[in-house]
Structure formats: structure tokens, C-alpha cells
Image (cartoon, one colour):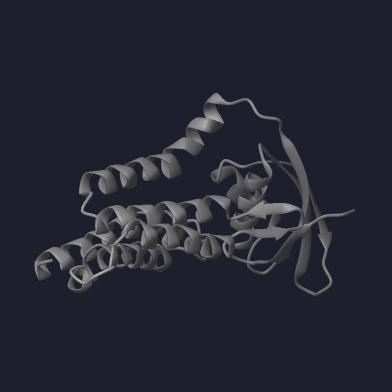
Length: 225
């Protein structure tokens, strides 16, 4: 393979992996930009080595080449990496979409390594459309059973307030009810007890992450009271 073709495939893999990685990065997942780029570039290199790296031994007796074997091992190996992104916390499973995106990025890398540029680019566009566009569409068109989760927020009253938290929830388009403020354990600490309303456990987990990232929020936990 010419050097320019080799470099082109690796750079294209890095670009396509970064597009999907950026979407995960903006949601603050650990498997974000760099992870998706590395998976895509690595898969591409595996495919290139599988298809072209053993050309020098093909002429020898009793030597056969099956490029699909390396690709199959990549698919198996990426499962372990994807499993590392799936978390179970307080009966909420998180990370399934990120694990699936890593698996899909590996497939894109294999396609680039095999020279299937149209398939790789088309798949990237389709995956981005699913990740970015499908959730709002799902919220609009699908009627799902509402779930309610009591939460307790411990905040620094010097940095934020109940009104600020409620405004942030409204701005984020998140349903909530029954906000109650109570004194915290510290001199400037306050506890806010509220109930989050969402369509799924995954959405509740997203709201929890959103609240934890707000200024002045010290801790977000499930309210068992």
C-alpha cells in the first residue's frame, strides 16, 4: 500500500471517530473524544495490517491469508472495552449508548481500513443522526410512562439558592416538583429535597449529572426518606 493511502486512511479514521467522540464528550462521558478516536484509528490499523501486512509470506507453501479473522477479533475485543463504560449505580444502568457507540466506531474503523470510505462516512452520519436527533424526536412522538425519583441536593447557600436550582431545571427543560429547602449540616449548607419527573431511568441519571455540575451544588443523592 502506498504511504499516502495509508496515512489517508488513518487520518480519515481519526476524523470520523472524533465526530462521534465529540457528541459523547459534550455529555461528559468518560469515553469521549480521545477514546473514540483511538478505537477508530486502532481498528483501521488492525484491518490494514490484516489485509496488507502479510503479503510477503503469501508465496510460501501452506500459507493462507484470511483478513476476516483479525476483524472478528477486533469485534470481540471491543466488547471488553464497551463493558467498561457500562455502570450500575443505585439500580440505574448507565453507559449502554456509549458502549454501543464504541462498538460502532470500531466497525467504522474496519471499514476505513478496508477502503470502504462511502460505507464509513455514511455510517458516521447515520450514527450522529441517531445520537443527536433521535432523543428529542423520541420525547415528542413517544408516550412513555413517567418515572418519579426523589433527590436531595446539598448546596452551598453562599454560591446558589433554591431559586437558582429551579431556574436551572426550567432552563434545561427538566420536569420537577415538590421542592423543599431544609437546613444542612454545615453553617452555609442547605438541603433541597425535590422529585424529578422523567420518562426513563436513563433520563433521571442525566438530570442527576446535570444538577451535580451546577455551581454551588456539593452533592446529589437519591432521597430514601
